[in-house]
Image: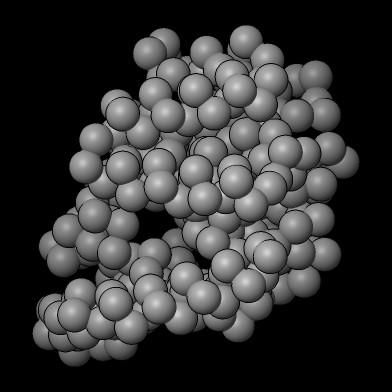
Length: 242
């Protein structure tokens, strides 16, 4: 049923989104006359690599800097890129990945190999399912760029502040995945575009209903500052980007 939902929604979504996809492609191309797409190598289910498609929001060859995490103030982000990131338009081409079977609509976000090599044994369970366009963490940390913009080393800040909870939320999804949860998370992702606060309330309510622990629920509320925390399966906070 999950795969059928993926195929149906991604097929309809690509057609329905074409009035947005085409102008976005043109706008990105007109900015510097380079491809509007960024083909990003990612690690998928079973630790198999795949090519994830995104609308390009950065300058050409931005990944040559070796920095994986992106803050909202990253100078590599283009003028049009800020717009497509703000409204999550850069993620729309991933519907093609869903149609192909590389990804699912809902699942832990895929990561680059440099980051998955840092995974603890517990975090490697994230690679037991298809990665997704959205999940709990995508909504809770939709402001990831703003969080990282306050730090000089965005990769280290990501591993200390965001990765521990992003992984915990991803693992919680792996343990509680169902068609009903998927449908709820898809709805909350749409709500988040209009009201992040309402979407966070919905995530918290869903976590509570599924029996999440109080610490995970507290972080998901996003009312308190994030503090350095060990990732799942580790006892110490990450002190280097690896």
